[in-house]
Length: 297
Image (cartoon, rainbow, N blue to C red; front, side, top):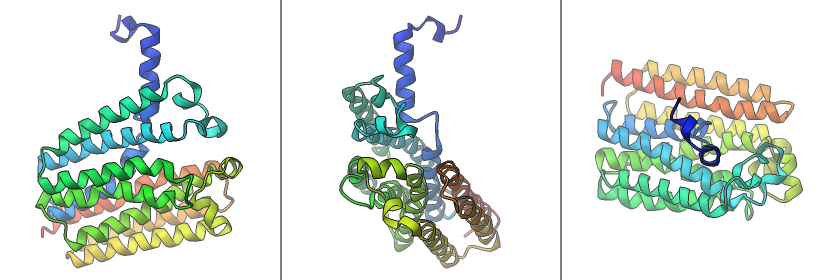
């Protein structure tokens, strides 16, 4: 008999609801948050990051993304039931209460903060800004068509924090990567918002997908190209070689494929394009890591 088998059904159901709330079983958000952090850490460390810092930031990525999902579902608890894709979320179905969601988010954020305490003062101070953005973002879709920009800023906070933790400084390079991460998040989250656009219009939720309207894919293309240009500029400025450049060929091909598949605006294809951005971030990081390994700074 397994350990799980002896757990009572109510407890087992509650654990399942907590997993669903944090989306730990759907790690795409972890990946999209992690890649810019790794870009930053590798540039900051010239390809040889401190192992302690690397572990702290990977664990912190998992914890903060999970907490962010809980906060997001709390903010959307009266909306999710009206959207087909989110109607099964635990707060929408009543499997968890609002208090339980907030308590879980608080515990996860506290664990993430404990990790940050093992870095330095600059990183600790910046973590409060990251916390504020992660808390505010879920509520912005009710007051602005730019919630994707707030999401981008929240996700991109890991970039200057990685530099701060690694070198106790945040140079201009960090802010260029920060800008690239914000712009990239706006691009892929616009694709994500396109999957729910019809429902969002009915219930009054705002997004860049609604704002851009028929120019949505053009806007996504411009954002993606801008992100690639910024990251290419950082690499060239830092003396990166042809291996790093090869990553952009892969990333550009993936982006072109995403845009082509979304040309009909089919929600499922838009969602698949959103998911595919994981490979965009991965291709840039693998190329960067290999480039530093072969051509040390």
